[in-house]
Image (cartoon, rainbow, N blue to C red; front, side, top):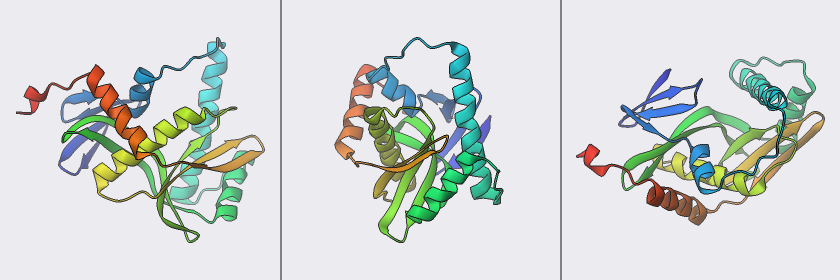
Length: 205
C-alpha cells in the first residue's frame, strides 16, 4: 500500500489491486467510472495473450519512468521511440505518476493516477500525457479518460491543464496524439456516475 497526503486528504493506493482509499473510504478509480457508464465490448482473447500484453505495456512504462526519474536509458526500440518523440515534439515531463482525486459537491468520489504532466516551449501551458501500447486505440475512451484526469488534476492541485496528449508506442510505431479538451464530457461522466452510485453524504457530517 502506498500512502500520500494530498491537500487535506490522506490517500492510500493499493497498487496490486488498483484500489484507492480517501481516508478510510474506498473510491472507484477513473477507469472503473468509465467502465460503469460505457462498458467495453471485449473480443474473446486468450487470457495468456492479455497477460503478456499487459506485461509489455507495464514494461514500457517502467522504462520511461526510469529514464525520466533516474536518467536510465534502457536499450530497447520502444524506449528509443519515446526518446525520438521527446526530441521531435520538444516536451518535458514535469510531474510523473501523479495521483489525482475526483470531486463532486466537495466530496472525493473517485481517484486515479496518470503518467505525466508535460510542458513544451511550443505549446502554451501544461498538458497531461498518458502512455498507450495497445495495437488499436479506442479514441472515445481515451477522450473520456484524459478529460476526467484533467478535471481531477485541476480540482486536486488547483493548476490549469491546457491540453491532452497520448504517447502511442508499439514496436517501431510512435505517435504523439492530440486529444480534444472537453470539460462538458468530464462533468457529464461524473454526474451520470453519481446518479447511479449516490455517495453517502451522512458519512461526512
